[in-house]
Length: 163
Length: 163
Image (cartoon, rainbow over all chains, first blue to last red; front, side, top):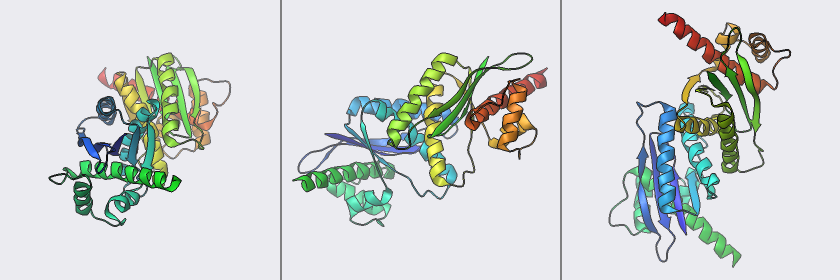
């Protein structure tokens, strides 16, 4: 099974596609999609959509795990994250890819054991859990990997609970 | 020229396609796209995208005029409006349709003469400006008509300024 983790954003959108494997999940794609803040928003959204389509075509994920942003203090940021996540979720749904949303706290708890974990701690835990030689960079890509790992952990828990 | 005005939203998305004509613009499509709040957000966004694609196919607008929401007090509403507007703007940009955003105040000023106009006043002005036998309903469709009218007024002003 392939899970695509996404940390949505218009300026920087982190992604990480993980192949569920034992004993450790294998990252098959990891990076950040950026769009130039100097371009008009509609053109940036169209560019993001193009990149996301290529990612879906390459990775063929069964699941899109995406961060749900509930308590952005800045309304303008919430709008912008909403626009990016809307484009990505609509494309996934139209392809029949299951979409699961996780809150930042759920993600931190899943990879670091507590919801108050800092960015650096999440990055180090992602490195450990994926058995990587170096911490994944940039931070947005590491966050996306954490979101994908959170989904794998939740799925494993569900499978365990059903047994 | 055809202008598609859109008042973006996930539960209710108002639209109105106007054909620029003299002495009055002619509405060729007017209504509201709704998606069920009981469905998951990704499915609702995909449904909205399907409907918007049909609207673009039918009306073939040169311009999408869409409301820019800057000061939503509720962050959850801002996210949801952002998701809907993101999906619509990305689709428009990918089709080469020009996208122009207008603030609620710009729209009210353009159709009612002042930015503090109420919903009912906007609806009545839309009825007058489009020479309709009855006030356009529901309010979201009237708002979308006001956004399209705002764009026509701005374009006329620009043409006038160039002369």
